[in-house]
Length: 339
Length: 256
Image (cartoon, rainbow over the protein chains, first blue to last red):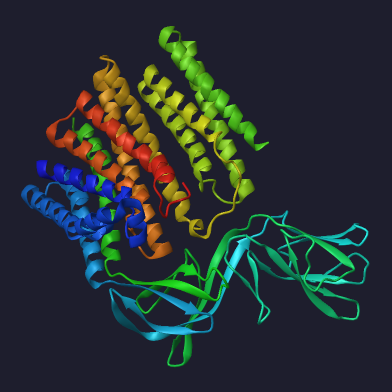
């Protein structure tokens, strides 16, 4: 008991240290923070990857041992001890579940380009083969578009002809000019490859937001053009009849969607839109949306997890809550009825 | 029209605090009654504010620092009301309503803009996780206030000690629910139920401190001032989990 309190205090103290020293960062970042010698010392003590260092796990092991001894010593099948038993046993279960995951779980990260598939990943430094392949059909990045993010179209005299929300992707007539306009694409950080004339977004930061629009005349002839929020006077392949103004507003991420297909023996056996809170579960593995290509949205990063410890941990969670509820509420109620 | 309710609650919490303190010096029933009514009014105003914000934002108003601070002011006010009804300790009620007022005051310094939900927050776990955490925080806050009063006065030590113990037990249960629901949510969003992110780690440190408090009480019979000091340490850890981590440390939990 005495020991358990000290163990909890020591684990809490080390955990605290681990929040003050950023964990698992690049060497360069530590060197700029602590200097070369500081980095060497921290590296040797394991404080840079503290929560999986041998001595932190050793402390957890000691706590489990201590808990087990307490449970065995004090165990007696009496109802009033049920809460105490459950709440302590549940901690052991949670730790056992975590250990199960460490030994028998698989965890890895893959980047898939649109149109391509993967059928293996690296877990704990070793390749793991899947008995199916996962194809990324499409990666979709959705954003919230503000009601006030508008494209304004003026005639040459400066009269406003049309106000179009930047999220509108329909072909819209420009007053009675005989022309119609359609927003084709948005890039937050416009950049053009001068040799191929291909437009990419240099980043997802709104450094040079631009809209690509198509102008169509009444005969169906169409010209494409780019309109820039920060450079209102520049139009590429400008249509001289109109002036444009792009009122840009901050866009926020709405959804990251990886549209994937599970392929087994050349047949699609499952399809799913993986979103942040909605992983694909297949063949004992779960696939989570984890990162994406911030430049051209061409690939998606997925976290692949198989953790047989999770059910044990969850059962531990449930028992812990039951145990605490019994200690704090059922036992006092029984006691007050008895007296 | 939204901020009107916030202002009404601020005024109501202020008057409630004022009347509670007045009732401490002038023993008149009308004063405590007025304090209680204003506390209810403050809670009602915040309820209206949060419901309206929910309607406008089309999502529960539980997703950034401002919204969480309003929730905290609401739940602490509510806790203060229950504690007052149950124990009728004016000094305790006065300090709890002062804390609700302070919390609501902090909300005026924060960015009120309604922003849409980030993909990571789009989950039913959001409501469960945030509510359980804040119910826990509120109970631990009341436990802290009771401990402070216990340390400062020599009267009613037993009742204050019992209040502190009961609210901490309740708060510990809800802190557990908050941590557990957070872990389950993290597992369904990222595939990892625990990643030692600073917020998670600090919530665990807080949990450990209160676990030690409860064990020291059960087994070693810690009571009164000794236990009260421990409750204060636990509360400071809780405050750091809530505010400190966001402003001083970085991690996954950058919303609130």
